[in-house]
Image: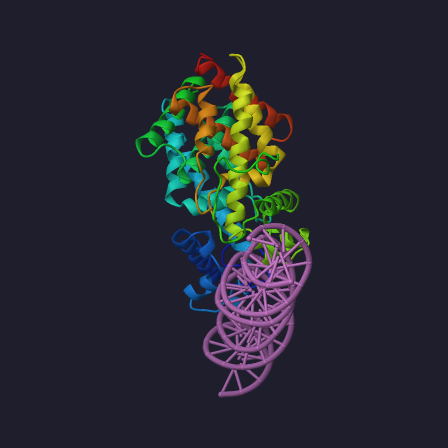
Length: 193
Length: 193
DNA sequence: AAGCCAGGCTAACAGTGTTAGCCTGGCGGT
DNA sequence: ACCGCCAGGCTAACACTGTTAGCCTGGCTT
């Protein structure tokens, strides 16, 4: 049935032996995401995840090859969504693009901090990530066409995000200021285009 | 490197019930650090650590209350050493200070990547860290007195370091360029004073 | 000489990811 | 209408993890 059928999947045929139903796999991933968001990385365990779905842990392996695969999936989703958010934020009219880009970045990181951390720390993932990384880089290049420059901006965004998530930046308004100042300093350097 | 193991305690009296000999504790910590460096965070396990010291895992608890304590100790040491390195790097004559600061930061991160990651990700530590964090911040303020500005520089350094450690920056010379560009862009902003 | 205790040990428990093997209900094809 | 397949669940078990309880001993202190 899945041999050719593959109800969806634009050319996506994955001959995984683990289980042909992508629908259930999607549910597992979404449950994992919620679990991660609510209970943190240490709460994301196979048995707990299974219990949320009303099944037992080994049954998860019918849908995914293991826990690293779950993390990889979450990581991938995070990068894809981040790329999308950044792209729409930065593609507006000229001035203020860098500010909006950083704003979107910060918002994404704060919306799901654990997911952001998981996505960024390449510790346990089998593959770093797909070309979603390239799309994120592309979004940064919208506001600083020079690759080096845009890389620096990316570094700034990531660094500020991590420091903020760890609660290391000056509390409250100080954190806002750091982001704003970062944005404005870059706004001046690379002509909005 | 023995910054930790050396003369202990400016007024260091810790009436820990776990074991009064700080010397052995120092050995444990140093072994843990080497183990982390050589085998990564997943290799840093109580049994493996114990085996390196020629003892069994439960004996470790005579010197430290648990694994989180080991991580906390390593984290603290990393921050202290980082603060020292940054301070000496940035305290030279005026121009080029930011560049030297970033260089030192990068060098520290690359020298012991796992340690750097452990130090920065506040995930499993009981306390974030002591005032060593403040000293690191102080080093950054040497090259950008404005706290917001120096915070941005810190964010830039941290972000670039993490991206480089994860292998996400353009390979080889591209990475060097990103750091240099970051340094020079900041060099211009805050007058070396 | 007596004894204290630092610092080792073994056994064990709860929880982790993961594998092997069994079972069953519903759906497709004949 | 039946039969068989197999998606998708299950239990048992293994090799790990951190951690606790309780025992023992050799050397230093008194």
